[in-house]
Length: 207
Image 1 (spheres, rainbow, N blue to C red):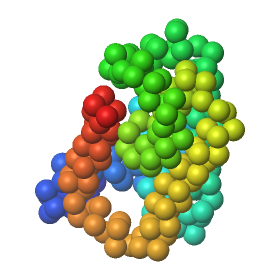
Image 2: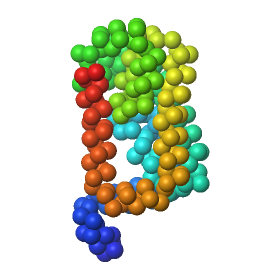
Image 3: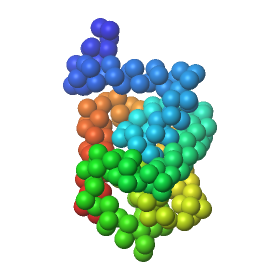
């Protein structure tokens, strides 16, 4: 504990943030980490607000030799979760779907999203699926707009796979320097992650 505290003081990282980071790395190396990643990835595509990157990144950093397996689990679970989100929008939009959209402050954009999908549905999934914009909003609204399911599935697999495998590839190739950068600037990285997460919701409200 003393060593951790000294490290925290040396790089001006708050002690609790450093402890949280160290705890996340330990969890990422556990045997059941893949299962946890799958659950988070599935849930994030349909209702959960936290992206799977919070587990994906430390898991690859902790086990770079399993980068492709980790990315594959993240992708498959995310796509399956997207199908669940699609089903919510298709069958339950006026109840569960609208409640979730409203929960994220986007209820007044629902009609606009539906109209937008009529013209740009495929590109919405392909482009926004690669950005910090919440993917759950895309999946629910795809179902609500009755967007073609096969096209939705293929586009989701392409965009989610590209995102997660690209992250895994970069971490596998440049793991040590990336990990060193994160650990030396933990507070900055944490704030940047929060900014991207919040910015995604804000962007969804105005785009």
